[in-house]
Length: 105
Figure 1 (cartoon, rainbow, N blue to C red):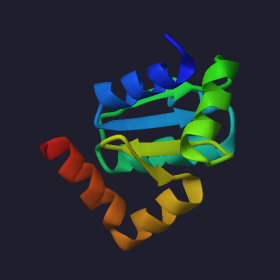
Figure 2: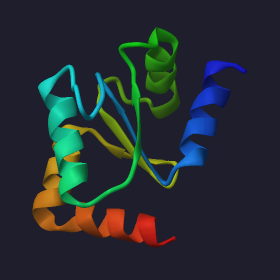
Figure 3: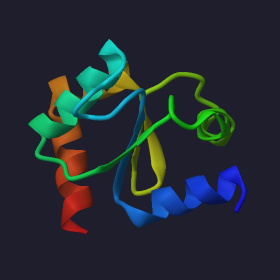
């Protein structure tokens, strides 16, 4: 399985996926920590993948999404964005709605 197939499989296996540096329990950067906190505050159940432990996945995601930084949040297979976008959506109440709708499907 090539990296792009692996990414498609991961995105298809969960409605909410966070690609981050580290894990939600042990984030390796402040942006990843904030992203995990925002999802937790929304009550999200999600899968996360550590891009630091898999350099091929890290590079493959940059190509897949055309988004150069991490974390990257995907909902229903679609890129939502990184920490700044997640924070903005959360402040507007839109991240909570997005998470609720994804869980309800």
